[in-house]
Amino acid sequence: MEAGEAWRNLFENWPESIPRQGVVVTTFGESINFINFLISGGLLLVERDRPDSVGARKVVLSYESLSAVKLADTMELARFQVMGFQAPF
Image (cartoon, rainbow, N blue to C red; front, top):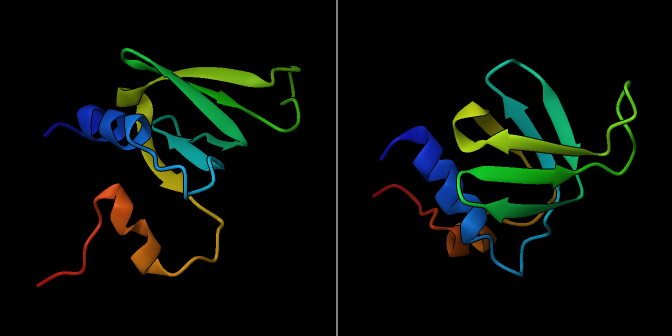
């Protein structure tokens, strides 16, 4: 599975039990805080809680431009199993 496809799968199947907020890191090295997101085909729309330096509150990204997603929640790792994560065997 290609990285863009994996990111798309993650966001398309984001469970209700996990808050839809965090930080996306792009392949350009930019970190974008988000408080919500929407999906559309090969694009991800993230919403910021505050505008960036040019006044933008929303950013549209291709899944291929994502390199990481950071989550600030202090939930136990086991709660992320609904997203497909599992302990190594």
